[in-house]
Length: 71
Image (cartoon, rainbow, N blue to C red; front, side, top):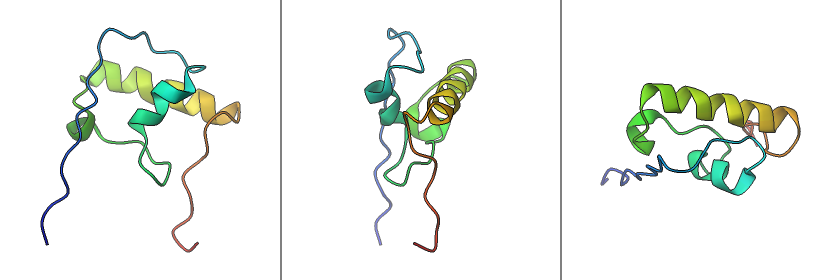
């Protein structure tokens, strides 16, 4: 099998806001899991800020939590 192509989502100009759900969805997989830094191309500091924003949006029910493996 061929490896899946890595997708780069680098966007350093947009400020990170937990209310900007459409922008945050670019950092989630189809199953609702956060994409790692090596796939998004973020720096460590930027990835931490994005992860915190995703967690806040999930807590406010704007984004879904990761789906279960059994379903």
